Image 1: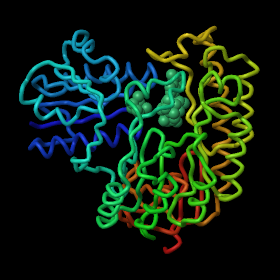
Image 2: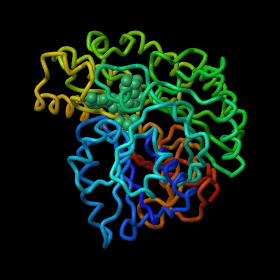
Image 3: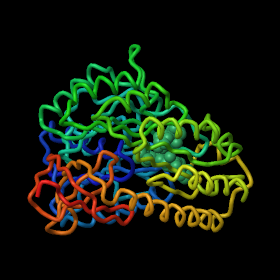
Amino acid sequence: MICHIEVYGCQMNVHDGEILSGILKAAGHIVVKNAKIAEAVFVVTCAVREHAETRALGRVTHLAGIPKQKPVMVLCGCVAQEHGEKLLKKIKLLDLVVGPDSYHTIPELLQERRRIAVTDQGSEDYEQVTAVREQFPRSFVTVMRGCNNFCTYCIVPYVRGRERSRPAELILKEVEGLVEAGYGEITLLGQNVNSYTHDSVNFPKLLEMVSTLAGNRCRVRFVTSHPRDLTDELASVMASRDNVCNQFHLPAQSGSDRVLKAMRRGYTRKGYLEKVAMLKKLMPDIVLSTDMIAGFPGETLEEFEDSVSLLKEVRYDYAFLFRYSEREETAALNISPAVPVKERLRRLSILQDLQAKITLEKSKEIIDREMTVLVTGPARRTGQMASRTMGNRLVILESLDFTPGELVPVRIVKADGYTHFGKPLTI
Ligand code: SAH
Ligand code: SF4
Ligand code: F3S
């Protein structure tokens, strides 16, 4: 069949889309970008916040109407896992509902032509699948799946199941293949990468091995980390390896000790700041980012101010800011009083305004600096190429004379927060 895949949510889902593409291709199907000619449409969904869920379900209705004949509609991802069977009853357009651990069943389900929901949650690791990667020269390699943390606001452990780490030798084999194929960047992927453990290999050791294999033509990053599991060992591996990017996404969620405890995060503001200080000391040019939630149940104005002051104190380069969203099954549903939605939005916009200012200031700090960027592909505007710094900042090059995968030394000449402009030093 001619298949079209649309993906929402985190990098885990993006890579799952590549795995799904691999499963479909191996079964003889064709995967295309153009939804108009699709006979089967797959929407890989995210359930982390209500908004993400509603948007993904909206896409199902929209996409079903695009091809001339109604395609087989398949809902995948975290919303599929969350609601399963109920979705088939509610949304008549849907033919199949398949959770993140059951994608291998899809070729058979397409043949059977039954309406069914498959949400078995096992220890699926997709070892037998060759993912079809779409983002050369950047690539994802899964190191672990699932999460055991059960932060009280979060649905991920329910929809993604328990933590399981892949054997290091399989990860290294995949990395070797990518390096041989000329990939310029590998992102090690997991809900909680730094709790990776398999046969006495921990995450710092794994990172060291991957970095050695990647060599000087390939950069290594990882996402996402839990602050509690950031160790001195990990920081020193990062600092000592030239090809491991000086970039850390370290989600704080709140700046208040009481709220952090109610979220069950397992660290204090002080402990978190000590880790940030360690990273900054070992890697003075490190690019830091965070996630923060505004209006968690019971968050007082004073506690919210602690989040504001954390943004000011750390001065993150980037922050992903969210208003709290109620999620089924999670423990925070039982915490009162709820912060009214309007107030959550007000607090969110305070965080957003502050961070926009900091992001702009931080991006201006790198003007005139020289760095090597990895060319990733054409930019949105014609005549320009996009590239990334070691810190994962987006740098636009005003020329098409570069090929994806090329490393180019540039001077940063302009910056407006998220986008930077680079002048190649070779020209
Ligand atoms: N495993 C990662 C990512 C989890 S989801 C981690 O632990 O960091 C990505 C982000 O979504 C979280 O960091 C959190 O800030 C946000 N998030 C999760 N559940 C949420 C909820 N119920 N309401 C608002 N934001 C939420
Ligand atoms: Fe969710 Fe917490 Fe697990 Fe991250 S660590 S996925 S926020 S439960
Ligand atoms: Fe969303 Fe699932 Fe990722 S809920 S954030 S797509 S793990």
